[in-house]
Image (tube, each protein chain N blue to C red):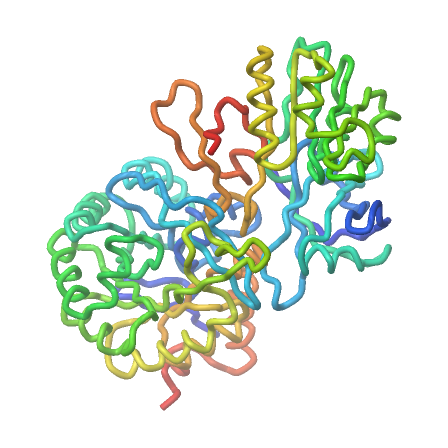
Amino acid sequence: MIDTSVNVAGVVWKNPVTTASGTFGSGREFGEWVDLNRLGAVTVKGVADQPWKGNPAPRIAETYGGMLNSVGLQNPGVDYFIQEDIPFLRQFDTKIVVNLCGHTVEEYCAVAEKISEADVDLLELNISCPNVSAGGITFGTDPKMAEYVVQEVKKYTKKPLLVKLTPNVTDITEIARAVESGGADGISLINTLLGMRIDIRRRQPVLANKVGGFSGPAIKPVAVRMVYQVAKVTNLPIVGMGGISTWEDAIEFIMAGATAVAVGTANFTDPLATMRIVSGIESYMEKEGISSLDEIRGIIQ
Amino acid sequence: MKLMVESTIRRNQALTKDIFQMDLMVGELARMAKPGQFLNLYPGEGTMLLPRPISISEIDAEEGVLRVIYQTVGKGTALFSKKKPGQTVRVLGPLGNGFSPQTGAKHHLIVGGGIGVPPLVELAKQLEGTVEAYIGVRSEPILVDRLQELGAIVHVATDDGSRGFHGNVVQMMEATGAKGDALYACGPKVMLRFVTKWALENNIRPQVSMEERMACGIGACVGCVVKIKKQGETDWQYRKVCKDGPVFYGDEVVWE
């Protein structure tokens, strides 16, 4: 008998698989093929206190084994999200993780306060988006700022708070320790790496924003390494992500120390990726005689 | 409702040196398709992650076949061009909102630029009333015979003057005194902008099919946006080509 459930900051998911914020909308877009009941959690696209317009197009560029995006957290605001998306997601037997974004500490606190009144399970503080000029990544690259914003946001919410980290730092463990001491209940990593592509015929960057977030299978080794390093220095649960497109990838992250995993860019390559990964983990556990993922979590010394 | 199918290729042939026509056996997906909608075609090759959005050119609901016509612009479309009949390709669709035949209109104008012509073919088939097609290309027009077979009057403009009118499609429409009571267009953004201007000056509300770089094709990634200001709205918003479009009213697009 296998038990695929995991405990993420006090919230029990039926299995370790969620979606990476920004790649799955609010679930609705994929609901025609994906049985949302089969997901441990749905992590929704980032929401802010007020609607954000986002960046100009082109926002997307494919790269070898990966892609770049510079969406810039376009979102209709938290009020719309509470009204439209939560009732939709609550029809399904899955946990709801809400990704929160802001330009300033005040904006992060405002959205956290509003969403805390709503029927959601976990919050994910996005201090790592490379595509917004103020806020986002500027909080995620400075340990003091990271700790401070987490401390402040915690004052406005009782929901368990994951903090999503950027890989665009010299020492990921320093930031991880900072958000832990700020009061984070969990860590998710990695957000996208900052990347760029140039159209040599037009002699212009491909993205209107010039640079964007690099994701997909190409970044997976960086992500596994960072999850491994962070797992060694903190006791917080980790939601690992970065290029996961198969169940084998997911198991790598768990062996590196992740409690749960998020599937991102793979949702574009194969809209059924999450379903394949959930089934793959189940049959792997059955075949290997693993009754709980605790048996393999963080086994890499 | 959308379907994902592993589609068998019935035909895949070159129309010009870099434009290909592929007939896809998609079963009941074909019955759901409307002119102006598009399909995601998945390269299914490890290093190419993203589906290619390709417009539906013709619909054979009875046979369950969709025809797509695409230009080889990169590695993904080049890979499709090498596929042989009997091989398969993964298809998701139909995607987006297509053209809406304007009710009451008797004389329809369809305006296509370059690889924007294919989605207008099925539209020409389905429109009731007379159809006049204005086609603008660099030098080699496609689908002229097919549009004529469907009963459309076809005008061709070429940039290099090698055939038909020497100039762009809007200049041709002005020069020939084009007239109609509905207009549907697909092509490069700059063409759509000037077609919109022409249409509004001629009291027609144009439907234009937009294009933008996409990742998911189903409205999740928010990559493929255009600035749209709907009637009655005070400010523009970025709306998704894949889900809110690809067809928008030309007067609602914020052209820049």
